[in-house]
Image (cartoon, rainbow, N blue to C red):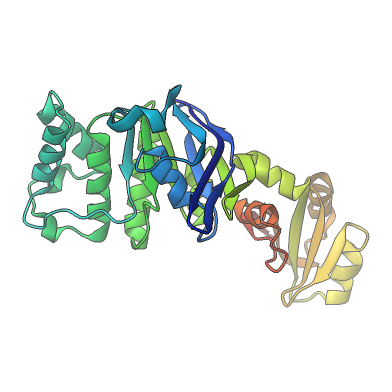
Length: 316
């Protein structure tokens, strides 16, 4: 189900939370909303799920104005907040049964089983929530959001506070939802590598304004401008001077503690790696800017060097 955000404004006293962002979230996509603290992400999510109304502008879910839909928006949008708690004495299954009954859902048992299976809690369904790990609690919250089979799923910092194993499990769950359902998933995260892995498209907010929007691939390519970085370490029997001579004229060369970095076009990087003599270089690595570089570029944060987190490494 497509989401359309049009010139949305929201102010709390003297604080401007949103200042006119406009963008579309394609139906069936997994979409990331990025921004530093105070960028307006939480405010936007609150408006999207009907917890508040914009001062101006419009948010539509499947063509329906969320502000005018009232409680019926819950039929279209399910929300997993950053902090969701459950009665510790209840079992996971009992928690989901309460959620299903409150929503007046039919075929509750089947829906509960499907949700438990989707989030990987089928084996722990009859354990008390007090015995759940933090990651299991987050997955239970996701299961509660999934019970009504919503066309839109909004996740606010879904992996915050999870250990690496819990994060990996949650990622697999979101990827499974993307593969096996038609749901439109909207999530926020401060972990840019997480968004890069899970999301098809992203919007970047700063101080309530939209700074960039597009597919992850498009934003990365715009930042890279066709360039990659080749990092090289000299072989044990080779001198830095010989390696430097070999890479001169191939691009912008910078000396590092391990050797040299050459920023150049992709085709030039392929030619450079092919031309290097094996006795000159011990290791080379080709990297291109990841989403973090695009994020900093969108925010014009010149104090932070672009990060590269897509890499191919070859040993000579």
